[in-house]
Length: 213
Image 1 (cartoon, helix red, strand yellow):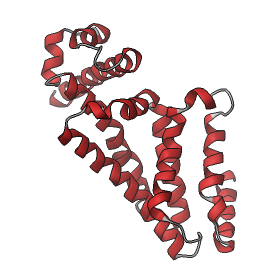
Image 2 (spheres, one colour; image 1 turned 60 degrees about the vertical axis):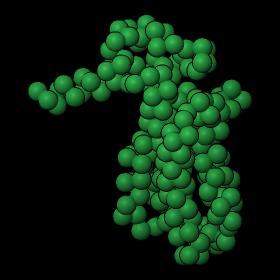
Image 3 (spheres, helix red, strand yellow; image 1 turned 90 degrees about the vertical axis):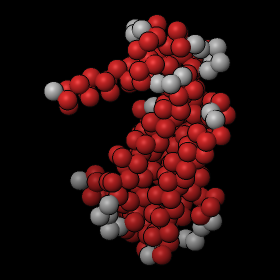
Image 4 (tube, helix red, strand yellow; image 1 turned 45 degrees about the horizontal axis):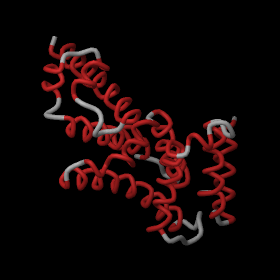
């Protein structure tokens, strides 16, 4: 009974968040009221306050949601991956996939994070830095095992993150030119293949052959 109630509560929260994301994206954060969100979500304004303190809390939850999904869905998939190139591909594909599934939320994060409180912005930065550490760990392992050339990791980590997020931020420029899988393949070529050592290239091609089999 409790599990069913919790599931229903989570579904209602997601319903409110999805409505808020759409309104924040279409008409702006400041122009959107709690009444607008309630109407779009087809719930009462009073019900929203059972889940969120105010409009700012809705925004914070939305921006935190996608970052938390990466930590819960993608990071565990890297556990036990003995080949760092395989782990790096999973990390890249995972963040790109999440971005593709949450285009509006990703764009909203870049537009509206300034509207959060100082404490909330710090928490978002901490969560984003966890994603950076995932990429850094994969890259360090690849370099250590001489699969990739030495890189400036401070810069390269954010090249990976920005590539993934650019699918959302510049979707208008890419959607008519590339299918999502084609965009992913380009990312793999630009961010991984271009920096492989001869040893790394051999391992990488072997992995791709296995994946295609």
